[in-house]
Image 1 (tube, rainbow, N blue to C red):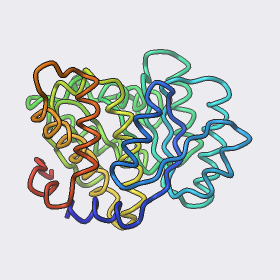
Image 2: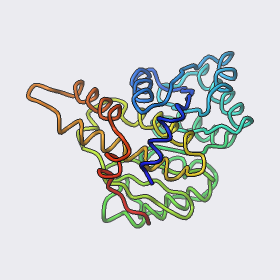
Image 3: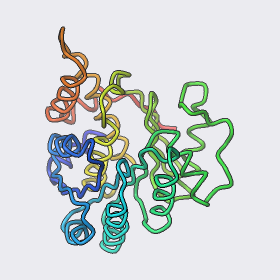
Length: 273
């Protein structure tokens, strides 16, 4: 049950090491605190192995790359793998530049990821560039819609099988898949796209959920997506005249802070395919 996933985060307070982008680092930390986890941030190569060693999970986000942080990602990823820790990749902007694409693909070759989370365009770029497939199904559109849903579910399951990772594709309709099962999630609000970093926040949140639910990683990843989307709905319902995207960001974080298992079970909108 999704209820168990959020309750396990609050019970175990997973410590998550984030090598994330500097646009959203503060919000990622606050979302982790709001869900019951504990954040730590470090991207200095000489520091990251010690830091990741004391954590249960590692969240790697390539949103603002530089050569130092890229080295840190490889070193932290190798250390986390050696210790059997949960590792998540958020390939922000993969496909937008050669550096981003090559870094994400290189990380996938050297680091074992429990979860890869991005939008459909980012995930398609990795599928094309990872060397594990000859291409992406031509009928997977650049937005997951009701019309393209069957093809997108098939693509997500196939990519999960090829990578051995849970694949989380987020957008208007969210997909969270392993090789055999896909959660199709319809929580959220379009206005969430007006806030910088809701995806980055979700990656931190998802890492904590997977760490706290080692026997149910797929369900935990899906629960994190439901939590974020539902918080977007709850936060939007509390907006008042004069509120804008800055207030909305805070209302989303507050909704996560106040969310319990019952609220999640009642508000989650998903089906399993």
